[in-house]
Image (tube, rainbow, N blue to C red; front, top):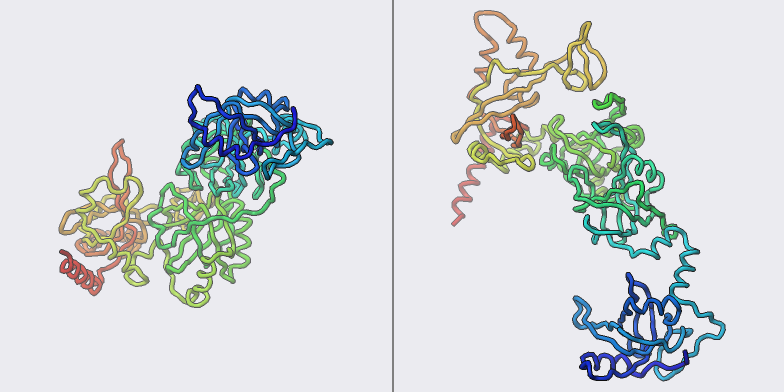
Length: 600
């Protein structure tokens, strides 16, 4: 190949001759090949005339010329035939598809910056083809770097279940613990990681059994990895912890290589906090939530026997409060109970602020929170929310009267009036909408009368005096609590009953549990049981139930769907109950009158 110069204003000539007839002869133009790289089975580069550059592509038929070293990066080629096309989505930009060309000069020592100047190849430079350079780099590179060179890295947002092979470059931003399970298929183990790419997109990856054992120690928090040969499927809302429609599964044949040249750091956990007074809408739902609060109390560690395998696991309860003046109990399990839980116990007198990611919301004692294997606890996080919460607590929160979220709806004081009056409905609104609560429980307030209580129903259960869970009679004497794994000589009775309520629009059956039922009946279940067992001319038990009927209350209720005999039906549960505050009722009526006057 002889030395030659690039054609002056060659790119301008190309653009002015993009629509020639097939009979026309295109001018032969010499350009420099810049930034030559492989894309699939083709090669792209920038055609340079020293003044202007243009994106170009070589067809697969010219791959042999590149592999052999005829066409080289920074070398010169003569354009013999080409077509000009628009770049999709960028109508003002063009690219050149070269269908025929010939090499003019091997690689020059630099990119040509001005026309009319001949730059000779370096005399000491040994010409090497693109494939030779790439192969040499692959041989010297670490496995992860070789993976990066041989495969194009895909952004997470581009992945879908129907895609073929792909490679992603991601950082581990959360790593769960190894969990064991036992189901109909047998025993196994599983763990999850949350992965984040450079664009901030996240995805959850799950590994089972052999893959879990293979990759558990390999994945480290904060490190970057190249991953390939995994599979994607639609994410299960019950278990997903990141905002992505898909989740990834890695098997033992998947490839995971650390990107050793990447800086390791502990990633910042992203939270989406839910105020404590809004937790009620998440009860028994699949959604996981994040919460931030000031630690009010920390319990000692307890040992709870797991039902599915009878294994004893540690548990610790902490009580959190926030600016809504509500408290909630969070149960820490396993390592969180013994590790961070002990740390919190040691500093409980300082009332630290903690943020917890990925909590499950249950209905124990109205509303309760529990950690799962993927939960993260951060003590005194460096965030605006934590600073604001700590400032509030130090200035006024520590002297403020708090109420539990599960019982905070029961009294017009302590902000309960807001819960009882903000979304008031009549009973007809509930019973005339049988689809209410299909996706998740919906919450309402209503004013109604207790119209009937069945005296022959099972109105209570025997409960453990420590944890309030159901107990059974022991073989010899006393009562056995499965939850506490201990026997007591005594137990207590706790209400679980159904009451019929009525208002001017209709009637419905409500389910009431202990705290709410005590407010309705006016005595404890033990006291009512004592009345039921007494003999005499007057049946004090029946009298007590009659006194309860036709009394008016404000109810805070949840409406959900339950399946019974393959048929779905509404379940209305009392979440709070309080007597009528007639002053508040009057204000509510005046507000309604005012709204009706102003509405057209």
